[in-house]
Amino acid sequence: MSREEVFERLNEVFRDVFDDESIEVNENTTSADIEDWDSLEHISLMSAVEQEFGIRFSMGQIQSMKNVGEMVNIILAQM
Image (cartoon, rainbow, N blue to C red):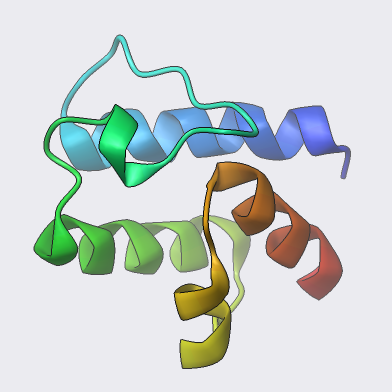
């Protein structure tokens, strides 16, 4: 799977979790860029991403993610 394909699928997950069709994530997107992305929504988001890609994040991986680009790196490494 290519990096672009991961971003396409992540865009759909983000739009679904945050119920906002205008969301377009990129390498540098952080929680500060999406209004409703708080700690509770972060849990929902991580769960939805795990389901979408059939992977499991470790607690260390979740804590180390500083932006969506780092999330993509972890997803690609696990696939």
